[in-house]
Length: 72
Image (tube, rainbow, N blue to C red):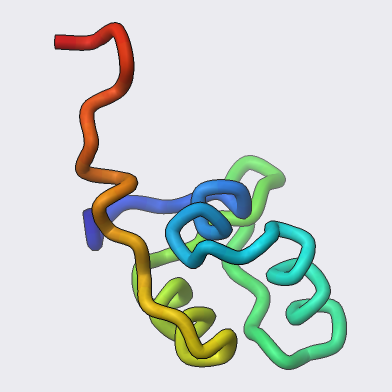
């Protein structure tokens, strides 16, 4: 999971904060902007840790470990 890249929506789910709060924090330079991959934001694990620290939350790692519905 630490080698994976995350979208803004995935980051917001892992942080349990609305995605627009992440975008706003970047806009006002309170959070570092992530790398762009194919024209989209791509958050690394370290980026998520920094965002979690900024928002004062813990990462919700259980959401990513649960199997998707309909898949066995």
